[in-house]
Length: 93
Image 1: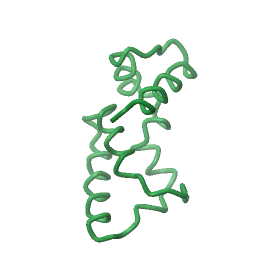
Image 2: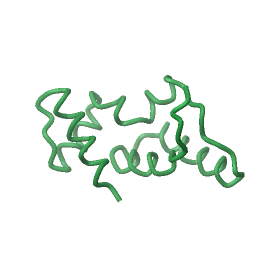
Image 3: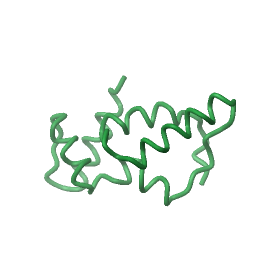
Image 4: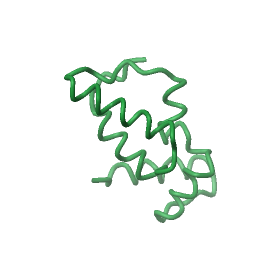
């Protein structure tokens, strides 16, 4: 799948803040750094990879919900968890 942008590094940095212990994400981060250092794109991606590393596709995971809650977000429903995650990403630096 093509996301039509190349800001994977930024996305990975946010995802690592959400799930610092996610080993698939750590592996992806290393691959992203290698690709970008070589001037190569990180896209396309796959749904399988995104399900392992993208917190927006993992918003039902206990680790993601715990991080959102610790960040002050509401996790009472799937939609509220996703919305809190989006708000966190919007202000993430």
